[in-house]
Length: 227
Length: 227
DNA sequence: TGTACATCAGTGAACGCGCGTTCACTGATGTAC
DNA sequence: TGTACATCAGTGAACGCGCGTTCACTGATGTAC
Image (tube, rainbow over all chains, first blue to last red):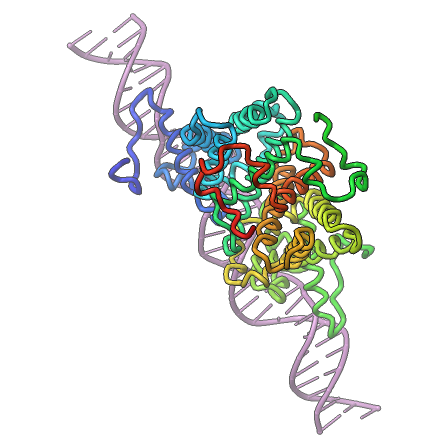
């Protein structure tokens, strides 16, 4: 981008003070890219940008809100990536698998950012309604595809539950491949297709077939409410 | 335990210097229990134990190895818990579901520790062979039950792959319920049984049934190697 | 056209704090003779 | 039985460092008159 990234940057022209905000987010993003990096500090970000430590305060009240800004930016990137990957025609199952692959690849290629996006409860998110949580758009698309696959409405709880189940598997897949790199993981593409197919098949009402154990032995398990 | 936990502790009798090591691990464990706690420091641990900061060095070279000790202790606790939960008789499917429920409950009830156990690559674990990784015992039990369910040998890759897939789902379930507490998660018990059943069903060779899309359209997906 | 003032986009020194790490030290308890 | 020494289980002061945060300041650019 610039010729002298490590040098002192020159001040922005009048009216473009907001540019620094952008640079700070990108610098924080760069520092957070390493999943094993030490905790982010305000001064480290300022150093990375090439600016006085106090200048960060001009745009962010604390590091929490800076991290949140990074998280939001990466979430919108994920949404964009998923839109690119997913061909809008083709059977819903193929679209689901394509979207899930994009999700996993994004997470595995950006382990530091993925951790930021899904780390322990961000204080700032504590009172945000579900629909406004970052990443909700990604999840909504998944629900819609699953509903289409199941030939139900997107508002159907069964679609929500199956989509949730897929999301949980995807998240476990990404986090474990990040934290347990030496584990002999199966090939990602094959595994995603296999897992998605298994979970989707369960949604198609194959419950009688896939439960060879004497039915009724687990009364609490008779939970196929919507079928 | 003691009457004066916050007070200065008295020195251990001769020959029992190792007791401090134990106390340090427990103190660190207590501090790590909160998933939103600030990063663990050596001095905070010493304060919690009621001991001089330098005393921690008598037993741990750095915090990394202390955290690893905490992680190992919690892993063995998880193994113990799982052994209690899982009735050894009964059909394998029921044993798998019971073990998975124990796993999830442990994780959700100990969010801070679960995060320590599965956080970003611990440097200390980098060159440990898979079989010596903490938690391997838990995973082995899962493989064996899955193999029994599938009526195959535990060494069969298909058992390994299905067990892995279940583990991934469990991990995603626990981590997301920790980090996204306001999401409208379905009831845990029902969800675990449902997900496990779907994944197990896929292992029983229902691939033709559960793939309503034209076979061959995704050449890479014809991956049921072992059937 | 000049000039006083306002605004913008930051800077730089200074503070107090908690941290990891070092070093020599302490004081009770055991052991050799 | 006494006594010198060794060992164990820690302590306490001190260090230099990076951190978040404060405060008054700077210097270029626009604007009113």
